[in-house]
Amino acid sequence: MPSIKNIEKDIHELEGFEVRITSSSTRRNLPDYDYGRAARAAFTVADWKRARFERNYPDLKIEVLRADGKVATNSLTLAKIRAGYD
Image (cartoon, rainbow, N blue to C red; front, side):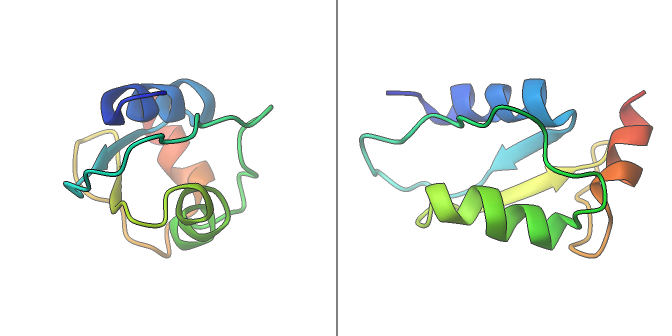
């Protein structure tokens, strides 16, 4: 059973960008962030949230962070976000 911090860490390690889970849900039995590979670079933040995050964690809120620590807009592609971390 992963914690919020472990989910954030797992997302960073796989996807190549930082996130901040902002919900204070008391939900228990959170599933692992369990994907075999990173989401496609052409995905937007909104695509990624819908396809990967909201599907597994419907009661949690998340912010995708750019390398400078600012919150990424939903229209930004994952390729651009990841490039900032290189």
